[in-house]
Length: 393
Image (tube, rainbow, N blue to C red; front, side, top):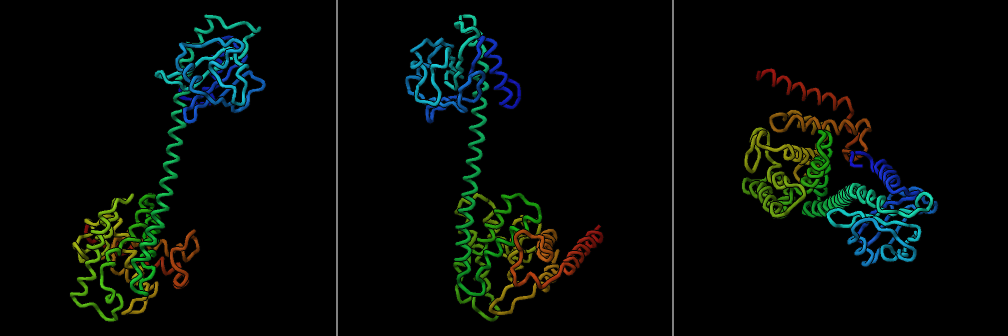
């Protein structure tokens, strides 16, 4: 009974042992729950009319009687009400002996016996043997209840987490839309960066929680732009030094905004601050080299650059998909992480052959490049990186 087996096997062994020890023809095992106060059958044998499950609601007096009982008790005709309620779906009059199951003095269940062979009474020897077995039965029932409770709590926590993540996604999508509202040319930018970053993370086989973090960080990466003068977003010429500094400060402002928020994903603030850092240390605000920049930052940074290239801006027309990817490959590994660029190319290629369950690219771009073109870019990137490694060694 204490071995590591499925509970269905354990319950069968318990029923057999109890019947043999007490000489009973009929036996049923109940678990006890206190919210609400209830006995619920988990296994039975010999009873012809036992419902499955049998349920007996308990009054405080019944719980007290069972909790304070010193062992199995023979139930005489008319005395069942001392231990069991008649308000359930099984008649207590079926039982001839009641044995409370307790762990640490706390009621965890009940063994109820029916008739003995030959309708003999339960004597002291059988009750003593039954009492001995009940200690082990109580532990088995208690462990099963704990296991079920733990599984239920884990399931509830997962459902809660899923609902929370859904809430975060919806709320952060709203923030992303608000961030981009200052100019028509960047509408949808933050949403796309979040979607691109998450898809690239999936292509790199990151954990589900990391992919969710990338999506959320992408939604929020430009949140500091809420403090940037609207006129800069519509300027059709290059920004001067002062204007560029004001625009670049959105990374620091954004970091300050999100650092005061407790997200489920702790790396969001660093992604917001560093998404304009570049592999060669030429980025801003802290001029970090690639080894100083976490992977999530590299992914969101590339997603941001990619969307900026293929989107219209007040000062230029959008670049074609092929030209954008060629330029990204040209700048790798000087500016971008080669592994992240490969993930971008992989998702684009999946779109070209229709293997993505959720399209990576918007419809307007999906048909502008063919799979062999993406393969050529991937091969060029691999050649650059491999040749560089051989040269360095």
